[in-house]
Amino acid sequence: MKNFSNKFQGKNNKKYKKNSDLGYYSKNTNRSEKNDRFLNSSAKNKKVENLKKNDENNTFSSLKRRNPTFKSQTEFPNKNSYMHQEFINKRNFEDWIWGKHSVYEALSSDRAINRIWCTSEIFSSDKFYILLKNLKSKGVLIEEVSWKRLSQLTYGASHQGVALQLACSKTISLEQLIDLSKHNCPNPIIVALDGITDPHNVGAIIRTAEAFDCKGLIIPQRRSAGLTGTVAKVAAGALEHLHVSRVVNLNKALDELKKYGFLIVGLSGNGQISISNFQEKAPLVVVVGSEDKGISLLTQKKCDFILSIYLKGKTSSLNASVAAAISLFHLTSK
Image (tube, rainbow, N blue to C red):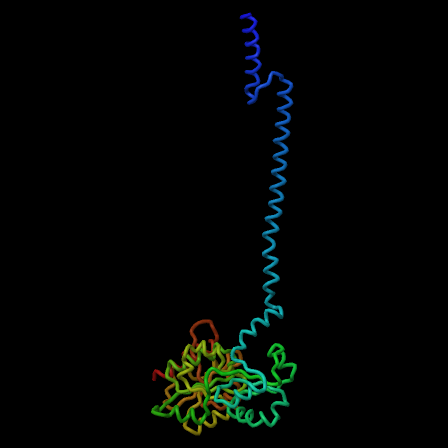
């Protein structure tokens, strides 16, 4: 009995030892092979399922990545689109007033006005005609436009045929500017702008003119930027300390200044006299032209001197506000 039990135990031990490496215990080797196949196939199936899940996650994440781009394209339109242009222009309506009653009250008050748009019916009406005519003689730009054009300017607002843009500072007449400039100053300098429509340049020139103690600024009614919010912002407070006169005709204003002893000095790259060699001491009007066209031919004929700034480098011209700053530095340091 002992031998039988030992033999049996030994055989069983061998069998269990053979199958112990598989991590489970079984007397039947065929079953172990089947289990191996089952385990291998189940592992493969798990790998396939994991790959499928990864593919699904990847496609889902890629879709999630694409969605924000699509939303951004719909929420923020192209810069060239009408909606974007409307958004840009609507930000500039803070200084606008439209509607008959609102505009009439603004015209009747002492508020500074930069520009007025109205239909021909409003301009010729009994209520507005005298007010508009007086403002036009003071240099306020008044444009007669169609009803459709006014609707475009106000983006379909109920304008009732009239709209205006307020100015950031009041203007004075040319006579007042001449009197104020000659007060306690034997040789005052006044800056006149000819065709400068960029508000950044106008604001920079105002800042420079005030910094060099110029006594005033002259801007024409047309072909010039008005005293808008952008001009006041670029001027950085200088507009509050500099007198500005807005004239209907710049050339007539220069003729008037000549009667009071002012010399008219124009800045041009074709000037025969260098500004560093200019030695005249008298009340001066410095005329600054636009960058692309410069001073108009008719205005050049009104000038007593055409001065140029000597440039040493390859650059052939300067920004209008930079040219004004260099010129005022030379003219005020003598």
